Length: 184
Image 1 (cartoon, rainbow, N blue to C red):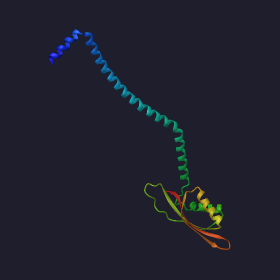
Image 2 (spheres, rainbow, N blue to C red):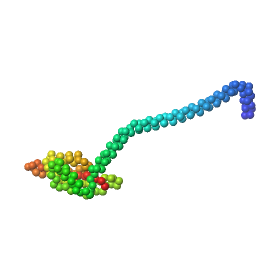
Image 3 (tube, helix red, strand yellow):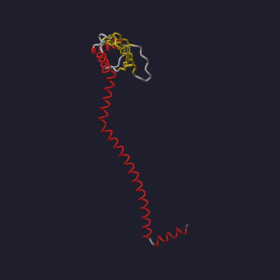
Image 4 (cartoon, helix red, strand yellow):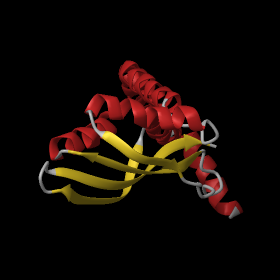
């Protein structure tokens, strides 16, 4: 090895320009490799930053729409909360059905609030059941159902039984069991 090094030094002294050129080429090649690798890393980082910027810009442009949707949801929740029944407020609960009786011109022959089942854990709402019997013409009964369906209280019809009670006047009797949405 020592002999090879001596021969290399002798060649460097004999051809200094060639040896210097080779040394400069090796140094420039190493620098080129380092700079190319650094450019690749910076390009990848730039692409990641560009994608994040585009995603942020998209989020910023959809912000008014998201805000409007959030406000709509909040208004819907407030409407639901305003129209919940309170199970212990029997007079107001029954008064709701008497108002519908007036609007649909039907006769409530029986109305009672039934005992409700406890709601599942974590559910902020409970179903408050009611049983009612109404007497009227077919169109009046349809009007009652329409008033119940479009009224402010959220309800679910659990059972319905419709029979003709008087053949002469075409009066019908409907037994109805409904559940109104109530708060805990």
